[in-house]
Each structure stands twice: as structure tokens, then as C-alpha cells.
Amino acid sequence: DAGITQSPRHKVTETGTPVTLRCHQTENHRYMYWYRQDPGHGLRLIHYSYGVKDTDKGEVSDGYSVSRSKTEDFLLTLESATSSQTSVYFCAIRKNKDNEQFFGPGTRLTVL
Amino acid sequence: GIQVEQSPPDLILQEGANSTLRCNFSDSVNNLQWFHQNPWGQLINLFYIPSGTKQNGRLSATTVATERYSLLYISSSQTTDSGVYFCADGSGNTGKLIFGQGTTLQVKP
Image 1 (cartoon, rainbow over the protein chains, first blue to last red):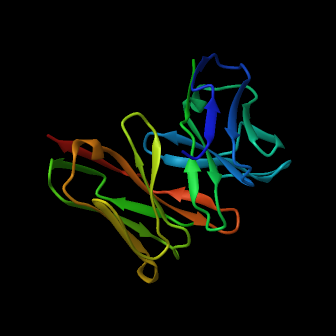
Image 2 (image 1 turned 135 degrees about the vertical axis):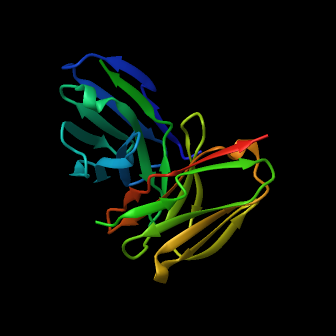
């Protein structure tokens, strides 16, 4: 158990609505990541954080923003959800200097 | 950026059989990991193996960094081994993981 929780675990929303997904860790690791998983694409990095208020973009960041005001929480926001953002979203933490990453249980998001 | 290719894409085994999954990289290997995604969607860490060989029960992995590939061996497969196996490598100081497309394994009783 890597001490990572994600909420909500499932969400159905409508196109154009804002959505915020939360990742919470209990071990005060510095690095946190958001990935999305889609059929045919594997997992792809959306955004990551290397400390409180320190974030950067990944390879599929368009349409997403993130915030990290506390070490333990990393929020992913879809300002105006679109059907192309229907996906499973995983949060990960980097536990040690060797870059071994551990993943949360995932959030399944459906945008109608 | 680095490209990660996994083979085979799909594999069907009878319970008790052995298998080898392969991961090829287009660039040098830095922080290679193997994961198992079970049928419930959970990503489980199997190995952190930037080089060398590791074993954990019926599973073992070998990474040959100089030749840019890694192998995952599953011996005496069980139905609970079914799912998708991913390899991924972390790049640079940020540690962003680049994933392969996965190998879908089905173990039949």
C-alpha cells in the first residue's frame, strides 16, 4: 500500500462542466504525477508536481490544470470537460530518489 | 523522446505454462519498471529494475541496459496472473514515466 487515495473513484459529468479530481498521499513525497489511460495509448503524463506550488506540463496537458497547495494533495481540474477527456485517471507518487513510482487506484471519468 | 515497444501484444496461456514478455527501448534505459494491471484496473508494481536481474516468487525480470531491452519471465502461470503487463521508463530528473502499450495476458484454467 503506497498510501495514495483518489477521489472520486467514479464520475459521470456533462460536456462543458468543470471537474476536479483529487489525489491524496499520506507519506509527504515531493513528486506527484497525473496520468490518463486510454485504449490504444497506454498511460500518458498530463501534469506533474515537484513540490508545493511547483508544477509542470506533461505530454497531454491541453485542457487540464493542476494545483498543489499542500504536500499531500495534488488536484487535477478540467475547466470545461469534453468527451475526449473520458478516460481513467491515475495519480502516482515518486517514493525515492531512484524514481520508482507507485500508483493510486484510479478515477474513471465519463463525459457525456 | 524515448519510444517503448512491448511484445507480444497479446498472449494466451494454459495454467502452468511459462512465458516471456519483452520491452524494447529506443534510447538508454534509466529507471525501468514493470507493472501488472489486474482485471479491476489496479496498477501493481512488480519490479524496479534499471539493470541486472531480480526475482520475486514465480516472476523474474532482467534488464540489459546496454542493449536497451528488458524481459519479464512468468513461470507456472496461474489464472490470477491474467491482466495487462506494462513496462515504463522514467526520464530525466522529473522522472516522467513513458509507458509501453502493454501485453495482455490471459491464463486459462
